[in-house]
Image (cartoon, rainbow, N blue to C red; front, side):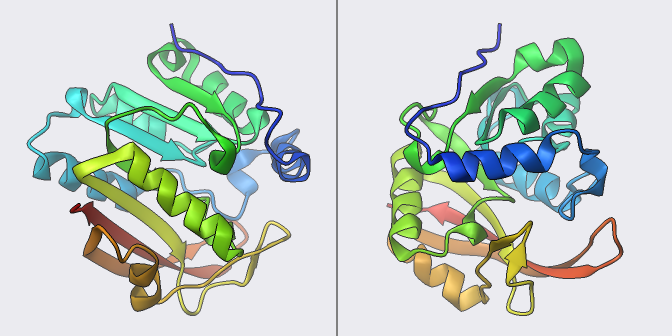
Length: 222
């Protein structure tokens, strides 16, 4: 049976409440970052799993900020079983759990602020982030993020991060956000990681607005 953790009291309540409010009583298909299928993520995940000589059922995947994303649905459909989804908003996780029905019991769910979480899974083969990193505008927050990645990923494991690209928005969902070039993002993960794949993408929001994203795929080398 999958575990559904209660909210961690250490997480800043303003951030938690912000994202709780975003998802409560709102059709998730209307939020700006919605995609019916995360095609690029699925491609990169498949490549990372194969590069490690793994089969989908043996790959341990952590999706941070995964909330209401449909990524977990497609991963389950493709045979992945070692999936953990973390989000600060229980309302976002609840969207996915309701959508999956009984299949939600095959997933590990963690409701917590990533930067304050002390129960991340160990020996993860892949860390996936399409929702968190570009909101970390404070250098200390980014350093803490990198430290958590180091503690969670072993040498030979993979990190996939989507951030806003150089021409991406500077705010999202009412919050300030960072924009990154390939070089700038690589410099954040400059010790013990190598960027093996990257590309700029244009995401069309449900409202018809184009947003530039940078997809960066790293290998943990030391």
